[in-house]
Image (cartoon, rainbow, N blue to C red; front, side, top):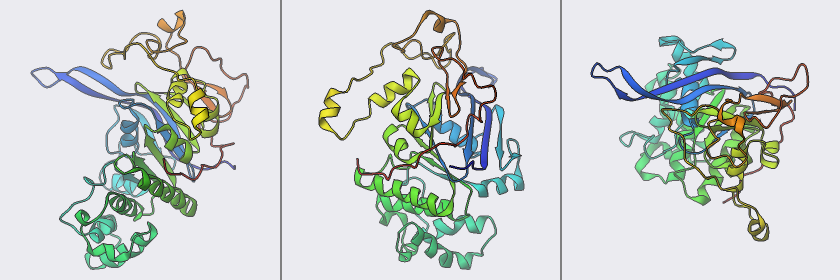
Length: 351
């Protein structure tokens, strides 16, 4: 695959949330939900952010979309630093970054018609007048395989899958360069999940948009993503192509996540060896010295208690934060977020 353009680049992202405050409102105890994240999103590719609940993946997505302000770090869209933009400049950024929320039931206003919900971004950004909303909603609904007549219904008349399609149509209204999908199928039944996932793949193939897919489901990310970034405790612990991470995970945390994913072959499933994580989760407000995963790691060594492993390049397409790996010997390795050598995502099936 040829080198694609970087449409979004995040560098050194940090986001902390206060747990307790003083009587004067100053943060007394905080937790770093995101702690030094670097990543890049390339045009026409899907980057999967995967990890346990609380790993920080949704916070990263919200920082990229400028729904939340980073405490440290920078965000570039199309090569322009948009970390601190406000007003009209931020409005222009939002045209390029559209968000698909996790809950399609809470994402739509039940007092408005579906046509209003879908065409509202065009109205807000001054591309159409209010009287033109219904005319523009129909083609957008057709694009997500819904009848244009749905424009005259209200969201409480739709199923969960239909609501999520409406949310996707709304996100596509401004023809953004990046779609950020935050657990887009977690609120749907199994049979509907594959339809929505395949729809996202079709849209990307037709329009060449980049997709950031946030999920705790490794199987879903494996099917859709070109590259995968695995998050633990606010940091990326492994990043690489979807194929290499799924077939030969380098970080013990990634291996544990993959071992929990069932396979469709019953004989193979029974013979698989599950990697079960033991030990206690660290206190998020007081991260331990050394490797943050060491209290649960089955291959931890003495150095893990004192040395905090950086995210190093171990191959042209792979980065890992683990003391058991050495940096690649190449003097000038390619960009750590280069999409070169990625495979084609698989068509999502019902699971």
